[in-house]
Length: 75
Picture 1: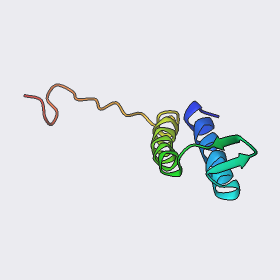
Picture 2: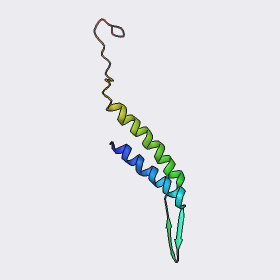
Picture 3: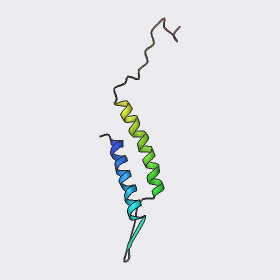
Picture 4: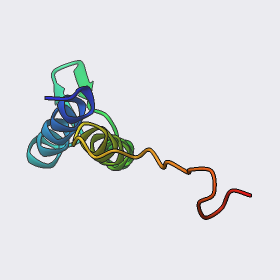
């Protein structure tokens, strides 16, 4: 599993936790505040893009364009 995919899974787990348990939790004089949902959504979209780039790079498709002398585009 790629690094971006691992991070994406982690961010999605944090999003689920915020949605299920809420943004803030208070017990007595202690308070826990989780990451902002909007920030997590921005990270999620960034990691989706990174994961797609990593999977495209490792798919084995050659992205090299070869131009030969006498061919199109070279004079």
